[in-house]
Amino acid sequence: MPTDPTVHIRRAVGADADALTALTQRSRAYEGRYRAILEGYAITAAQVARDACHAAFDEDGGLLGYYSLVHDRVAGDAELDLLFVDDAAQGRGVGALLFAHMRKTARALGAHRVRIVSHPPAEPFYLRMGAVRVGEQPPRGRVAWARPLLELVP
Ligand SMILES: CC(C)(COP(=O)(O)OP(=O)(O)OC[C@H]1O[C@@H](n2cnc3c(N)ncnc32)[C@H](O)[C@@H]1OP(=O)(O)O)[C@@H](O)C(=O)NCCC(=O)NCCS
Image (tube, rainbow, N blue to C red; front, top):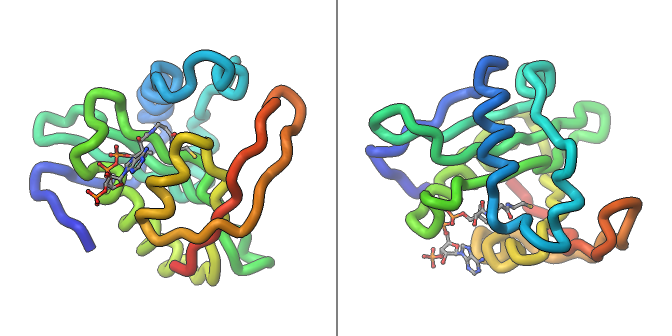
């Protein structure tokens, strides 16, 4: 599992919701035609409390990124609902740290499988992390583009 002593990952709390929303909304990966998926989207305190949401911080307490995992106890699997690294913090291993932490969380929850509907430009990252492409999610509603569907055995 990758480590970095300058990055601290902890369970997110309701008070983090606005900062998580702001990081998400300013993501350059969702500019242009991809913007539609984030329009009006906000992470709520209830969502943070309900889902397995964890955030990464630097040594000064600055938010670097976060993930949110939705666990389906009945089905015994999970879905990676959100994974974002702040634009300024990308490319230095924070995504890999969050992904490894998510994997550990999924195992602890007893999920046999993690489903990932990937933002198209993020697919190479997920493949690098060991997820496997299993199909494609067709366009739906305001999401007018197909999205890679991947799975991970945690
Ligand atoms: C995708 C994302 C989470 C990756 O986070 P990151 O911190 O930049 O990634 P890391 O620096 O930890 O990279 C880990 C590895 O993946 C590779 N990688 C990361 N993004 C990649 C990309 N777009 N294409 C190819 N490889 C990529 C890195 O080169 C690195 O490989 P290495 O182990 O051989 O050095 C981040 O770019 C992001 O938040 N993007 C915008 C939001 C988004 O699209 N999230 C996914 C929603 S489904």
